[in-house]
Every structure is written in C-alpha cells, then in structure tokens.
Length: 611
Image (tube, rainbow, N blue to C red; front, side):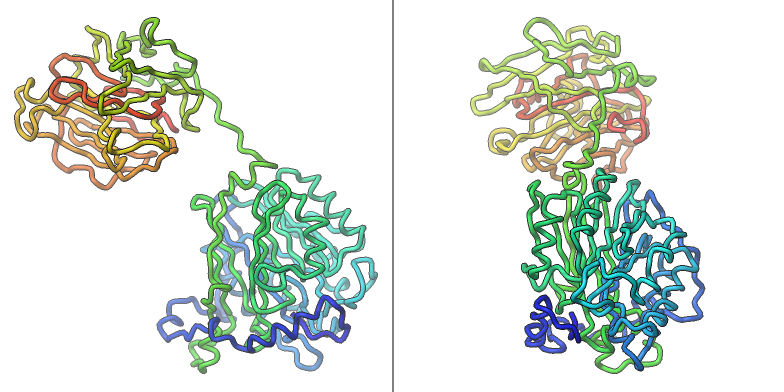
C-alpha cells in the first residue's frame, strides 16, 4: 500500500492500515540466534548453480516479491535488499525447485527513470541466468489515474515486453505492453502467471480473456497490484476485477496482490462453485521498507497443499554481523497472515477445465502374470445366482454363491481409479442375525490345495460405505481360506481361527492373519485404519520366507520379522467376502470388492494391479 502523490479513491484504506500500528505485535517473531543458524545465509560471493527447475517434480516453489518502492525513492536508492532476495532465489533454486518469481508492482516510489534504472539493474541478476519472472505496474510506477492505455513510461522502457522476449517462460504481452502472461512447467503440467496492470482498460480485460481462452486447460495464478484490501474484503477495484474477470474464469485459482497492508487473505467462490484463494502480501510499512521481503509458495501436489513462508534474505545475510532486535524480529515472519498452508485438492479443483482422464480398463490377459493362480473381476453386471463367477486365470478356481438369511449380492460400476476391471461386487453383510451373501471357490478347485511354499501375492481392492458399523460389520473377510488351525493340527493361539484371512478389524485396519507351514501359531500383519467411502488396494506379499502387507503400494509398519513359509491347507475352499470361525460362517463383508488376484510368487510393487 502506498501514500501516493496521485491520490485516488482506491487508496483510501491506507489510513486504516496505519491504525493497526507500524509493527504489529502479532507479526513479530522475536527470532533467536538458533533460528538464524537454521536458515541459509545469503552472500554476494556465494556460488550460484544454474537455474533449471525440475518440470516433473510434484513439489515446486513460486516466489513472490511485493512493493519495493521505498528502496527506490529519488535520492535514497538502495538496491541491496532486492539483490539479496534475487541471489537467494538463485542460490536455493535447485533445492527449493523455484520455478518462477512474481513481483506485485510498485517497484519504485515515483516512477522516475533513475529509480527504474536501479531496480532494472538489480533484476539483471535473473536475466543473466534466464530465470523466469514477471513484473507489473503499480500506482507508484505510473500515473495512478491512468489505465494500461497510458502510453510510454519509464516503467515500460525498463520492464516492457522486449526485456522478456528471450525468457522461455514468457508467453506474450498485450499490445500496450502493460499486461503479460508467463508459462512454466511444474508437476508435469503447464501453469500460467497472468500479470495485470494496476488498472485494466476494456482492452486489457479483453486481452486477458483471450489469453485464457487460448490456454483453456492451464491453471492460472493472477497477479496484480490491487485486489484484496484486508481479510475477507476486496477493494472497489478488486471487486471489479472479480466481477469482470475472475469469477467467470474457473482457471484462476489463486490471486496475489500488494498495495495495501497488513498482509491478508480472502476466499471467494467463483461461478463454477470452486474456491478462489486471494492473497494480499505487502511489507513496505515494516523495517527498511520491507527489506525486499519475499513470499515462498511451496506447492506439494501429492499432499494437496501450498505451504507459504515469508522471509527477508537481506536480513538473513546480515545475521553473521550481528542483528539488532528489530532485525531479528523481521528476518522471518511467523504470524498467521505470513506463514500458513492452503489446502487445495488440485485434481478436483482443476477438474472443470482440465479433467484428469479416467484410467481405462485393462484387458484381463494383461493381469495374468506368470504364476497367476486365480483372477476374478466384476466389470459387468453379474448374476451369480445363475451359475458361477469364472476364474479368468483359466485354472478352474471358479466361484459359487452362498446366501445366508436371504441375503443378496449386488453389482456396482464403482471401482478403484487404478483398478484393471471397471466394476465391483456389493456385499451387504450384517449381524446379528447374520445375513448376506458371499462367494466360495468350487469343490475341487486347485487353489483349495495350494500351500505356496515358494511365496505368494494376494491382492484385493475394497471400499467400505458410510454406514459401515463396527458393532455389526467388524472382522469381515475380504479374502480368506477356510479350515481351522485345529483341523490342521495347529493348536497354538486360537485353534478355531481360519487358516488364513485378509480381514478388516473393528477400526477398519486391514489384517493378514494366517498359519504358515513352519509355525504352530498365527502370523499377523497389521495395517493402519482405512477411511470409509474410499477405495483401497491391499497386497500381501510373501517371498518364501517373510510376509509384507502393503496398503496402496506402501508397506505397513507392523510386518513381522519372523520367518513364515507358505499357507497351511486342509483342502477346503477360499472365500471372497466371507469369514469363518470354528468352521462356520461368522461374518460377511459390508462393502464393495473389486478385482482379486492370487499369484504363486512374490511380486514387486511395480507389478501390483494398481500400477
């Protein structure tokens, strides 16, 4: 925010910003010497590795620099803080995977040629290394009463389109030169920074809409000088930007602006019903005109979050010389407005304009890896009452229907997004009294006798509904082998437990409990709680000596170290969706079961069905 020589109504809230105090107590860190040593220092002599962001990494950083005007004010020009911030980006670009820098306007105080010459020279640090960045004009960089049709200015002479022509991230500029768009690749996709002038003309609005129309699947970060004025509030011009541009363009998911202080945030729902995060960042009211403070927006596409941090590399670089109390307070800001996280489900958020195509079904033949003993999938409506469910391995391990208490078995098109077959069976088990339906391998199926001395892999996809209740549905089996430990002559632990079961506990923890050939007792692998209404992939892998349980391809923590060879058998059937105790059906699954595969060897994670 700014005290302008060219006052206009959009600047009125400046006085209001002052009432919160020049240095708000809630924003002061009071950093200790330990904090100084924990953060990397910046020196002019430091080596700067080449700037080459990783375009495929799902973690990347967007750097943001707000108003630097007080550092470039007539006779009191000091470009050292800006240069320190730019060197920080160069020095830490690789470890942070910094993909781009956005300046939010008010580069200078008076828009004078000499001021622009100084900050233009500072930014040559990035030009020389080919770093992608954008700037835009704030109300102190140009005559504030004008729009982007104002014509020639020192700003345009210094930061016009010609400066960016050689940047690989530069997408183009509006004919007037005051608006630009920039494209970078991160997380394996294209992103846009749309850098807009302090005041858009009708031509400027039309240009911005045209740019987005030509990149209809590209997420957009809109940067401008004025938009948010304080928490949950937009300025009058910011409201105009929302009404005329942002609200109807679902691609815009994040906006960044300076001009006002203190830092603030707002969230608005656009016409598509999606959240747009609008952030105000500006520190010119703080020590040394903000000391070229930078925001680091750390995107993590796997965690669906943007972690935001605010630091002053210039003050960090002075730490070894000894900092006064004010500098210690200002080198890193930790208030809620300066250090926070934004949760965004990126896939869902971008689904309206860039939907991720559903993974197509894969032929059953491609799942028949060497050693496949049985493979069942339910991609079409199956009337199991009319016969059996065929084992697609061709080994004759077909399934027949068993009903209890008049229960039924349904079919659903619902499936795990990475499941080979597109469909699932819907089990409706419940007790007491026990009711439902399940599947069992037919008498004489080869699987009934198999003992898997050389290892095995058992995989299953499942999903539990919202009404799953541990009082009625716990300890149901996804895949289990009938026959008791007692019947096999293994009486350690509970002799009435089945010989093998991949079940779900009362806390929805997957459990593989079985009797190996080389043990009297039960060997158990435990997974963590799996939430309801979510598809999960389980894999139990035994390499001939040890067994590991995987959830979504990740090994669980409670995998026993003891040797476990094979699976004990008394020649009885396997069950899908059923669990026996004492040789009798005791529980039936309440949920959906997708593809199930049993292989007579250990498979690597890369060969699991969800790969």
